[in-house]
Length: 195
Image 1 (tube, rainbow, N blue to C red):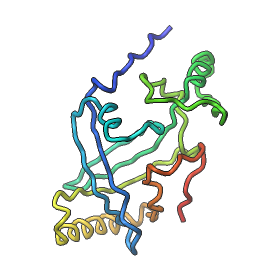
Image 2 (image 1 turned 135 degrees about the vertical axis):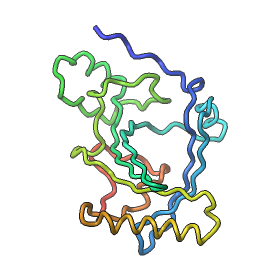
Image 3 (image 1 turned 45 degrees about the horizontal axis):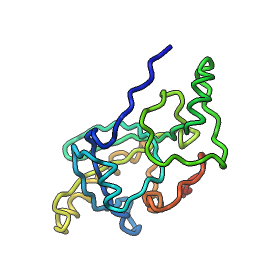
């Protein structure tokens, strides 16, 4: 029998605290601009969020691989839902059948009051996208975002990367509402459609 995963106290474990603005309204360009504030190695994450009147809404696991070329980041990402407590105990009891995803929780199940103190086994995670497709984001950070010439230079560099990769990828403009954490999460398998 495997040992239980260690419980993580999110108030003593250092982490990255990140705030990102709602993206600019869509223009006739695939480049999305967002202001971002990051505080690395931050402790008391839950207390800090509560002190700033943020409340827990839900959590996901992000699997990502980042590659850097010059100042441009290429990030492949996909997201997973964590099983709730009932699903964790059910999937632990039925761990003799690996490769079978945990069943979808019923809507009447109570939502957790805070982040999970442990991570479940990888096999118990449920992909947000049933097809398990990767999202490719190409990013470039501009520190002096109040200087239009630097913003334009970054946009031009990103558009150059897009032109370079157009034969390999079908770049689509995504509805900016997918970045809005104020929107209620949709059930597994649903989301905002991309044209």
